[in-house]
Every structure is written in C-alpha cells, then in structure tokens.
Image (tube, rainbow, N blue to C red; front, top):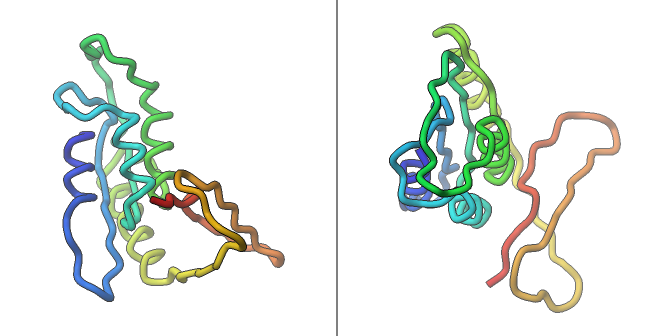
Length: 147
C-alpha cells in the first residue's frame, strides 16, 4: 500500500491539471519497502491531493517485520490529511460509489489559495492553518515544505 501510494505521488502530471491520488485500502500493508514516516513526508511535499477510502471488513493480524506500524485508522487519517484530502470508510459498493463521487465533486469545486509569507523563509516544514469567517468546510494541507 505504501509503495503504491508513493509511486502515484511520483507520476508526472500535465500542466493545468489537478492531480489526485485516490487510494482504496483496508490499511493493511505487509509488503511495502517504504516506511510510513517516509511516505508521510513525501505526501506532505507532493502537489497531489490524496483521498483515501478505507475498506472495512474483517482484518487479519499482520506481521510488522520489526518496524513500528501506527494503528490502521491513524495511518490512513494522517496520510489523507498530509495530502490535503479526506478519508472515508466503505462497507459496500454503494459506499464506494458515494465516496468516489464526492471526491471528484470536491476536486472540481476546489479553489487554489496563494499567499506570500513575510520575511525570509527557513528551509523545512512550515505549519499552515486556513480558516473561514462565515462558515463552510475547508480541507487543506497542514503546511508546506521549503527546500
């Protein structure tokens, strides 16, 4: 799962497009080489919106091969947040259709906000919070990365 999402984030997209990675997963990853923390960092740096649909069902115990693996719901929530998207859960084909349709609708209706920070910017991660004065639902990346 981690390697697949990372690969999707590396794909080059055409200018004037709105890149979206839509991950359908039960959150269980037994074969990826990439660590969760590395994927989280790359997701924060990517300009691709990441929506995740968690496929609920019976989960079998999975080995972690000596690596720390965060709880499944925390992992998927954090990846969606880092990618400026949302995470939903599906238990039926109807749920899948609804979540996918909502993600596409939100992508079509999104706005691009631009800001220019004051003063020199140090390299690294900078937290960012966007609020709306008159209500509304805003989903944004939690920050931005400066090289």
